[in-house]
Image (cartoon, rainbow, N blue to C red; front, side, top):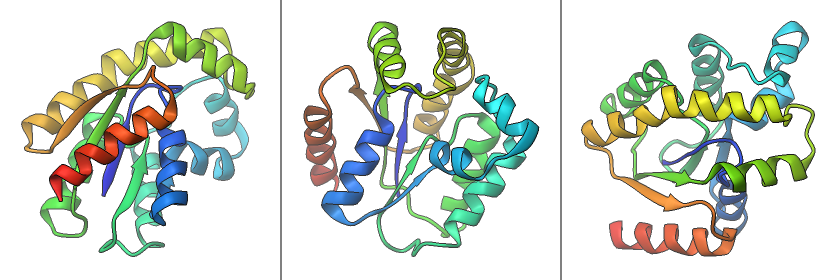
Length: 179
């Protein structure tokens, strides 16, 4: 399992698509799953930029794990975002359910992220929602990167401001070095 982390707009989904298309990897994108499956009031809250609860997110990822061959390499995009989610994922690794190959933290500047998100034009990409995502990323998710490192995971920071092909090539170089 390759974990892609970073603030919305850092390029996680772009990298997920590239890996899925080029290497045939399964790609679990929590953002895509939520946009497809979350309805009603929770969907409205999500469109306003609010995070779903840990229980909701973990349940969705757990269901996704049951749909793919966990013995083959796959990508997990946008998870974990909180310590509770990270602990659950590390428990899955410790139990042998999944193998964690590497974590790639795509680091992108506010300016680049804002431009990318406003250009893609989704209803949840408002200026206020983007600022909220950045604040949540810095206070809640970014510490998870350190937590994963401290837990022994191979974590790599990648400059997400670069073009997608350059980012992909850097990730591939690091993965080739690991295998």
